[in-house]
Amino acid sequence: MSRICSITGKRPVKGRRIIHRGQSKKSGGIGFQLVKQTKRVFRPNVQRIRVLQPNGSIKRQWVSVKAIKAGLVTKA
Image (tube, rainbow, N blue to C red; front, top):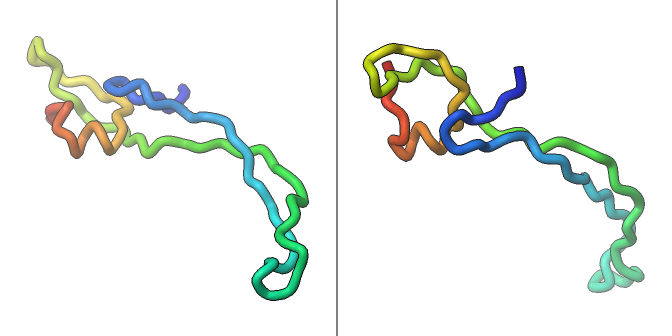
């Protein structure tokens, strides 16, 4: 199961890690050069918690910590 927040819809997004190399111009070099870019995934901080539903039932869901701190969910 993919880790997607059931409240805010946060999900993993793809990106790149940029690797630089060289000596800065300030210290006498020609500046930082882009060497390579490697692919990576930015994963949201989601926790599996027991959530109290509006009808009174309890269900376990993936919820982002930002939604928990904001009070968007009622923990059971």
